[in-house]
Image (cartoon, rainbow, N blue to C red; front, side):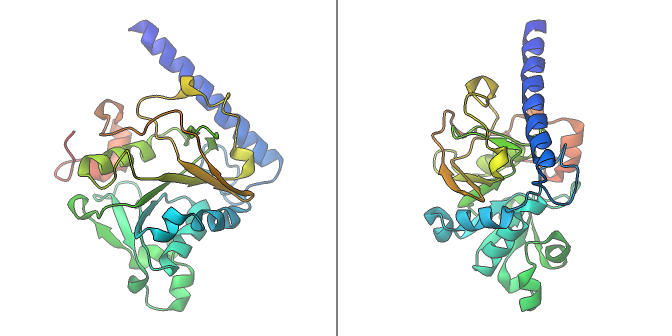
Length: 256
């Protein structure tokens, strides 16, 4: 038991060190916007709008009807573009809400001015519709947040596990298919690391890999080394995570 705990601690240290390297690089090269410093956050990087455009050109995205997008500032341009394109966008609410997602659709916004800012949290919170667990529609694409990503599909978030827990809930509901639902991410070129740095040794069973990532330079299809997980790892859900993702708490909780 002590050996397992030691191995897990060593793994987490390696992940933390890699995140720090990426955050340092972004800051040192002035590649990030507000909020700064970007350490401990999903970076809001310069060029994120261009990365979003590359992702929008992917055939799967053009054909999608429902897209789940993480709530970070750097994905605001993507959320806006998807709403303008007439797609339904699911985005997590503020921590502590008793539902999993807010639903954004162009029909909910009162005018063109609102639509132009549809992906901005300050705007969509006025018009978005809360969606209860059992009302979540089938999700065609999931866009996750990233601190670091490699061409082998391995990615690191900021280490809290929100994206993995959400994915687990969606698999339990049947809203996504681990074998078929594409998982994408957007990031800066400086967040892309060698596959040797983010290798299979750093992957845990609950970690969610990506099928492709978009940077300001273009789109990269990943040669995934790991399959996507299924179900909720309740042993990884601590009190803080349960409080932040209110849908995990009774009476709205999903069974494993």
